[in-house]
Length: 314
Image (tube, rainbow, N blue to C red; front, side, top):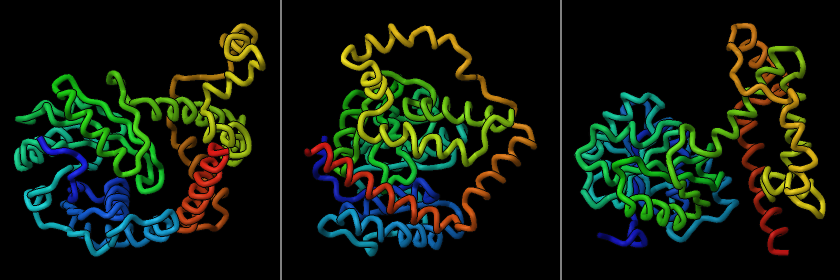
C-alpha cells in the first residue's frame, strides 16, 4: 500500500464552493489537481473561484511548485481519478446522490486509493452502502473556505477500514490541515453540531424579536468569539472558574444549566423568519458585495491565524 507522503496528484470530484476551495488548497500545496463536475459551466466557475482564492493563498505562502496551471478539468469522472493518489468528493448534500457518486468513484479508482467525502452531515455508514470496496471510503469534512480554515474532521463508517482513516488523516496533516480523527460517527460531526446549537438559538432570538442579526453577530465577534480561536469554549469556561478551574465553574454555575438560556429545538422556519434573517444580513452588509465580504473575511482570518500563532509561540 503506497505511503501518503508519495501522493502528488489529487482528484476533486465536485467543483462548487467546497470542492473549488479544496482545488485551490491542493494547488497552493504544490499538487497536480484534476477536477470533475457535471455542470456545463463548471470549468469557468472553478477558474473564477481559484483566482479569487489565490491572493489569500499567496499571502499565506505558496508551497514549492504551487501553480494554478497544475489544474486540469476533465471531461469524465474516470479521467479525473486515473492515476491519482487521493480523491476528495464534494458533491451537494443529497444522500442518494452521494451514495451513487461514491459508488461510481469507487468503481473507477485504483483500489489502494482513499476516497474522502466532504459531506457536512451524513455519516459514511449511510453513504458507502453501494460501493464495491467501501473499506477505503471515509469522511473528510472541511470548513468553508477549505483553502483557509484548517480544520478537517475525519471519521469512517461501519465498513471503513482503520487504515483508510489513518491514511486520510495523515494526508490531511501533510497538506497543512488541523485534523480531528473522531472515535465514532455522530450526525453533523463535532463542529457542525456546536455551530447548529448557536444557529438555532440565533434564529429563535430573531423570530421572537429579542435580537437583530447585527446584534447577534456583534455579540460573537466582539465577545466570546475573540477567545475561541485561542482556547475554545471548554477551556474558556475552565478559565471562568478562576483558580478552581472547571470544577469551580461547574459547582458555581451548574444550576444555571437549568435556566432558560437556550432553546435547542429548531424554530419553525416561517417566511417571516426567513425574510427577517435575509434582510438583517443585507442591512449588516451595508452595500458590501459577496465578493467584498469574502475578501474581508480572508484578510481577517489570515490576520487572526498569524496573531494566534505568534501568541502561542510566546
